[in-house]
Length: 317
Length: 242
Image (cartoon, rainbow over all chains, first blue to last red; front, side, top):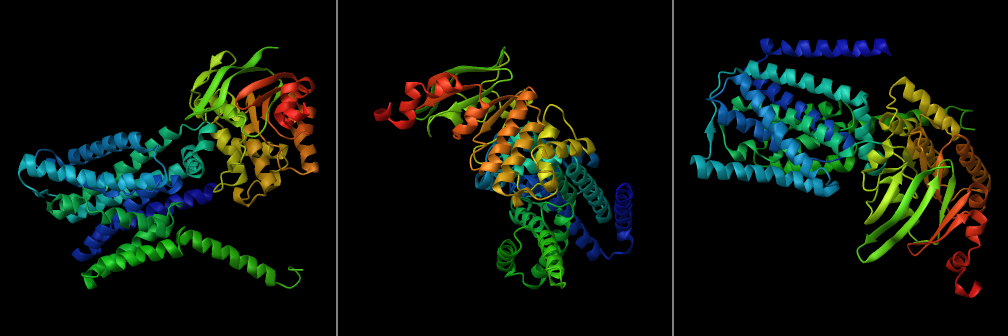
């Protein structure tokens, strides 16, 4: 067990280190692609950290992503860059705590609708503020951050997110999340402080999502609420995590990489029909692979193995 | 003997319906007490209020002189109350062993890792389920799910164990094993309050019965005496037979 563990850790370190050298070889377009992909890998993994085991499907991803991006836009000229990231994370954490405290007692579809509404509400509030208080709708972001810098920051955040997700999965709090996902009444009767566990993980997940938005913001140079709070981000994150399997460490990664590449290709080649294809794809994934690719593969592997055992003469009798 | 559980004036209203109406009784330490009554008489509602699943509308519940009425279920669990549910509540996405570890890891002992696993296997052995430890909980039969739920409750090392029709639906052999299992708890100093319809089990197990009808307590005393109380006979069989 110990040696398997150290092998996994070593592999993880090697992969992250190899990825860190990528900007040396990649073309500018390749780097852009990698930034987008790392962004979604981190979003999907952070989303699954809370929503995977608890089954609280959140559509608030873009609310926090947008908060991160907007915080950077608003304070970009008045603060040092590292401080910008810290302030974004703090605002994300604060909003997540308030929202989580007020709403995590909602269950099932009510939670889904609430989180969707939250993202829209924040977008409208920001729009209202910008139009009535500052008199403009958009903002420019001029920060001396290179694409390589953004890439390395995202890589670091992705690595931290994986480490957190891995640690949570092996810890008592990870078990608490699964118990909550199965039955909150039983969870409470086992002695789990259900509200506190949910709030803590929702806050951690939302803070990571906020940071993804903050780190990527300088790429845009111009933001307005419609761009920063685009609900497609929430849906993409959700479908990526579901495709791979939201209950496994590498599930969101396995969903995010192919889907991100597919969406890139689709939006480049079918710009007018992109949303239609996206919608059909969502439906297909939910129908065909409701529990994700990894679970699907595992079940079929087991079935195939069982089948094989049965066909050996003498075993079936 | 001293009171472990003291309930006084306990009331629960659902809208216009009073499901539990000013019920008072107590359970001594080490006792096995049955809470009886026809369907809909409010027994499960009483258990739900003791475990914190439902807040009472009125009255008080004390566990060894400490007020627990109105506390959240996780706080009550940490004070030494464990329960099973009328409709079995397994944790389907976990293994059988993990179901038990759930109560070891967050109960007052906070066991984790190898210690939790060893303890979980011991608890499963007790209910005859150790050989299924690594199976998925959703693959268990109904009876085995009941066993698993009991192992989960026992793993919390409760002072007070609440069993809600735990013996219902067992076949005669399983019933005998079940009764023996509950009897063995008595020797370990666990106090049991059980809701049960299997009268043979009640007679075999219980020192005392509290009988409810339509939300009110109608009898409270040693098992045979309580069961032959005229009001109890009327409640179960109807007025013409009394």
